[in-house]
Amino acid sequence: DAGITQSPRHKVTETGTPVTLRCHQTENHRYMYWYRQDPGHGLRLIHYSYGVKDTDKGEVSDGYSVSRSKTEDFLLTLESATSSQTSVYFCATNRGGTGELFFGEGSRLTVL
Amino acid sequence: KQEVTQIPAALSVPEGENLVLNCSFTDSAIYNLQWFRQDPGKGLTSLLLIQSSQREQTSGRLNASLDKSSGRSTLYIAASQPGDSATYLCAVEVEGAQKLVFGQGTRLTINP
Image 1 (cartoon, rainbow over the protein chains, first blue to last red):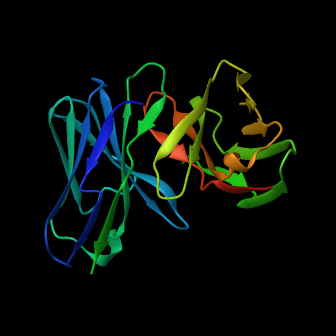
Image 2 (image 1 turned 60 degrees about the vertical axis):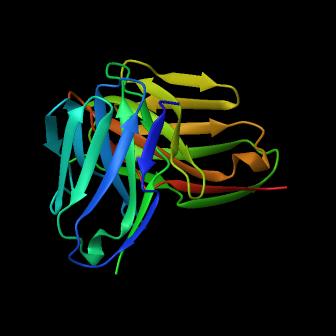
């Protein structure tokens, strides 16, 4: 257990509003990831970070931005939420080297 | 582009049976392969991690094998129990990328 906390766990918002999801980890893991999980698509990588202020795009990054100002926090921002971004979002961390991935409990986002 | 497939999508067996879950991937250039368990409404929990140089890993009643050349992995569950009911996902880490590509999972139900 990498001590990963996601907030909020549930959010309902309207189209066009900005949304920020927060991931906080207590294990000092170098790598952090944001995935979304959707029926029929499985888990898809949105963005990831390989260190403070070092981020890169994943498979489905359009419409999302991220920031990592501290080792323990990784923020995912939807600048203007759309209904297609309704999903369950998972944060994950990786110490690096071993490759084992640890997941948070997920944040369920509904965009009306 | 790496693609990961898990067949079947769902499996239902009586308690006590030994069973095998399958995972296949299209590109053999992987760094490692990981099996996860996901309970409804929860995050993913890592079960077994197999490095590309390894052939198998074991943890309790679970045994995972890896055949890179054929692009296949299996997860063997011995003496299944109702508590094993969950969705099982496999994921491969693309070499040098620290990013995982997931299959869509097999939903396993163990009937008492």
